[in-house]
Length: 394
Ligand code: MG
Image: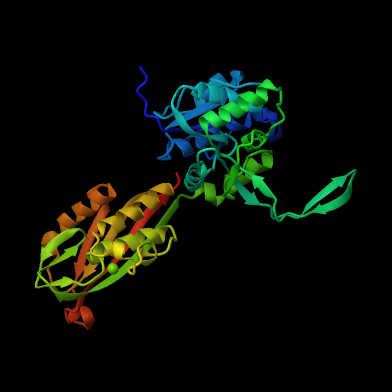
């Protein structure tokens, strides 16, 4: 009985090629190692790690079954590989047919030779894959382009509307399967990517911003360069900071890091004025260089009047996840003379841990007075600073 939900997003990773240009002596290039892991395994991991991808279908060459079994780890999202055809196009069609009947909604089609595909690129392609349209990640061409023949320049080609196509390319499964079947029926096997089949079948294709790190490993020099590139060897650990202040006004409690604490005043603000969560939200946005809490939630917008700051904090957490980030640590310091933070510290840590869905030993809440100096010292308000640590990719 088929009980699968109706909106499964899948990816087909095409790994059936022989990779002649990368040097035959080392076997097909998708099984070569870079920094201790095969190219194919790294491409697979990029998709199994993505929260919006439910199923990964790899298409391999019949001769590579043993290589595949030796070099690829099991994963709950990873289906049994299927055997491809004589061309890239034929292999994609095999993959699309295997997915038929599995209630697939969107399907991305990706070349195994691009193992460094970033999570935010996958998200962008999924977002732009809308009904009756495909999505194609591209980079603008920066080299000057010449047309030539017999060692002679014939002309310079304007590059202003030229783009280099990458993968993954996104489509609705039924639409791209139909297009592929149609191409196979008329014996048209000339297509080098799936967006060109879509064009041929009159499926409009959206251009999506590609990523320069999403390189295709083709010649031996590409492998040498990839092994040396710090982008692929140094973990992408980022820290962001945040700072916030709110003034007191008459009231009977303050909310700090999601916890209501009785006090002789409350904090003034458009939202619930949770200065701790605001600093943490800014720290998370800082790890992505994605503006600040004011640019995401303008104080001028009446929608956020009296808002629970958990909404802001969770929004930043969601953005981190979408970009493939894992929050590894959150640290905040509350700066105030009163109320006393100590008795509420662990409850605050628990609240932050709950909202961020990470363990409490990765959450730090500290407090200090301002030694009676300045606005904090005069008990005119509370300040907070925060640091977030996020690991991206991996
Ligand atoms: Mg604030």
